[in-house]
Image (cartoon, rainbow, N blue to C red; front, top):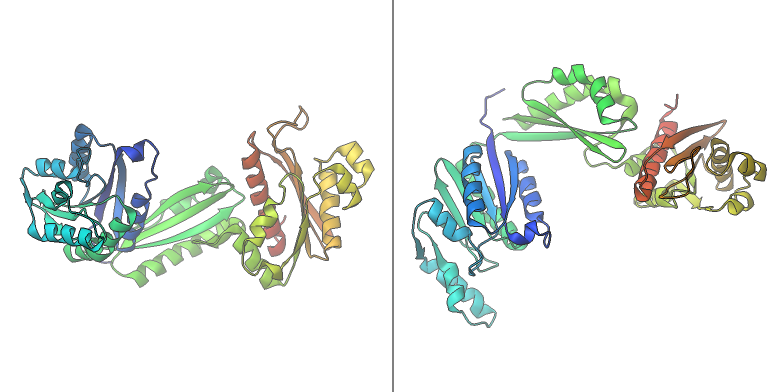
Length: 421
């Protein structure tokens, strides 16, 4: 494989409003995605307030680490907007009027029937070492610098203005300036195994990955994503190399893999049910319909989703689902015996191939020594067989509902593919 130079970028988001939490920094996230598409690796994203000391230190630190520094914010004409004067100071240059920029600002205001004020004129004064980059949808120009063996681009913090500058100027200019590698990602989606256990299972494989393929563990609620990132010069070669590595690791973790890249667990369930021409019905107690919500959030779910009941009280577990009163009295609603009957009865009632049931103590109260908050039983009934699982979850109600849903969907997945042992 041809050698390549990794191009590193740092993103600086400037503004007190970001640190105060008054505005979310969606800009940095979007910029990272766009840079990844062209093979530029973002090594750091930093948020800085409107403070000279902090900003100058951030400039110096970014210069040491990155080939490209992209900045958003701090370009307004008021005294609290410091980006422009501090860049001039950092690069030891003056700020002068750029006639072309002034005309652009004047035209912007004239088109909107507004007066160009002296304060607005300041937008057209730029550091002498920068390349003026017109902002067609706003008044603050972009500024491109090539100083100290680093490329710098300063853009407005207004998202649609920043995106216009990135799309029309910054991305093409970076491609023109740097010999960029190709970055190829593929994500393996797993469920039903924790991060540390997964790492133990695949440690030998991970330790023998090629030098240009990196692995990242991305855990979330009940799931772990394995992101493989390959760097090189040929897209097809990278794709083939990553697929080869996936083929090597699959036998070790095949039971836990439910999909790849952006596929969700509920999408995977829908795909499997349609492929098998099977249908599912649900009896949800502690999950309160959340599992049904996930399943029906997928277009086309009517092909495999028969329906659901939420018998929250024991009275309706008995009256509607025909769970034995004796079972509820002796074992309680939160028990293996109860979810077995719930899953089997919902399967029959809705003429489904699979019946899923949940019953538990979501919290934050209602638990006791024998069955503390977070105790949940789930079950999946199918032809000739019903499987169950006891979950010991958290003290957080909403988290318990979400984790119950993931566990129940994974149980259904395993039943569909015949890997319940």
